[in-house]
Image 1 (cartoon, rainbow, N blue to C red):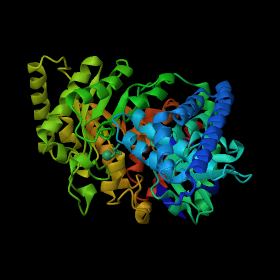
Image 2 (spheres, rainbow, N blue to C red):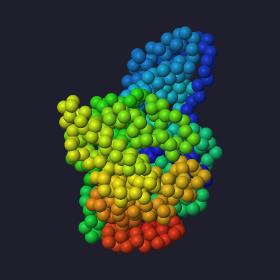
Image 3 (cartoon, protein in one colour):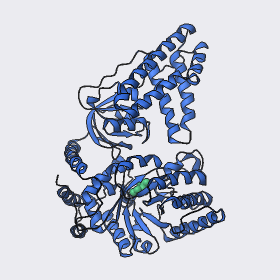
Image 4 (cartoon, helix red, strand yellow):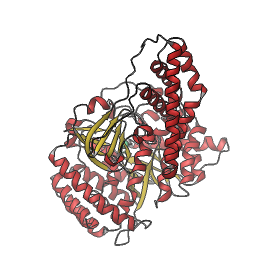
Length: 570
Ligand code: PEP
Ligand code: MG
């Protein structure tokens, strides 16, 4: 079995036969001996594609507005002279139709790919998809059959037209290399109701020898040729998911309150305004983590104060008065942005990352802090600093917040004077010193992804040591407990915003330690709230004490899993 890690796309879990969809190969510099005939061949292919999109659009209008819009955009590209004319010109100059299409797609999509907004960048996907459709038609390869069994479709990139050619009865999940969390692949997978994982690098090569795969669209995990125990776990999860989904559906829109009346806020992790859409239809208590790297990632240079203000205030406004915890930039580690020109490092996770970089680039940091402070005037924002290891770093960060406030005052820009300031507890140092930090912070939020990595000395992306990356390691649990209890003793809010906040089996422990806030991917909110409402905080507190005396991570996991399953009654 091989484990891969991609980006969580559409939620859910699926097991199926691996089916690879390869794009048509264009042999560059294929000679074109008869330009007028080649022009005719191109025109015939273009018209066939136009016809195909018109038919698809009509079919889709009846039952899927999102897909219909995408297909309409394809037709517009196929009719657009800006797209067609350079291809025709290239063919007239002696290039084959396939090569001319490939050249134009490359040229146009690279222009869109570097544009500022997600929306514009995804027009690059549209152009690539139209190019593929044209090339497939030129090469007469229109048919693609899935075997008549649950299938995991693997492709570098998938267009709606690709998915529409496929018999959806057998489509169990999708894995792609290109396409982000707002890509059409993900939109389509969500619409069909199947899981999708995107962002798997060299996807065709990695899947080339695999026969079956399990994909988890909620976490981004992929297991190639899963072993027996992974398959058994998969079936267990499927049964649980089905039973749970049924119950959760019946109990929407209640507050996150335990059986003994302890309120726990259930919040969402987002990367920008685009992630707020799924929250429109569900109850939630705020944004527990706004990862601002996604805002910086939309630019090919440092975003200005104004650009950041727009991005943050959009989320704050959409949260309609609910608190939004905005984490300052966590660049470095596995998150690189070319324009930061960070040095290449031997151990990036132990290197120049997050506040370590920001404190060295004061003006960039001030712009961000000013933007967060000003966004706070549109609703309720809080500032959270990542990767803090020493009190001096937090003091320096706070000093810059004070400076940012002065600058805003000078510029007469409204901002939240009383903004809450906290830290992300994700280094062992800050977790050990939680009682000290709790005296100077307004809140803390535990980043369990990094905390687990740093406490167990296990690179979370290294497949050889995944067994050790175990949040049930008692050392991790002890530090989580220490952090939550220290914060509560000091009377400040204790949150968790790493993946464990959405991990149903782990939640009894967090509730037992006294967590006030759980923040997770929007897709998990309703399930988590359902569980929280079925736990008794006092009982969970006793459970947490009991767990602190167990040495074996697997014994801990099985104990708390049984508590969670009992509470969910599945
Ligand atoms: C974490 O470390 O738990 C966390 C939420 O931050 P990120 O995953 O963005 O590093
Ligand atoms: Mg982190």
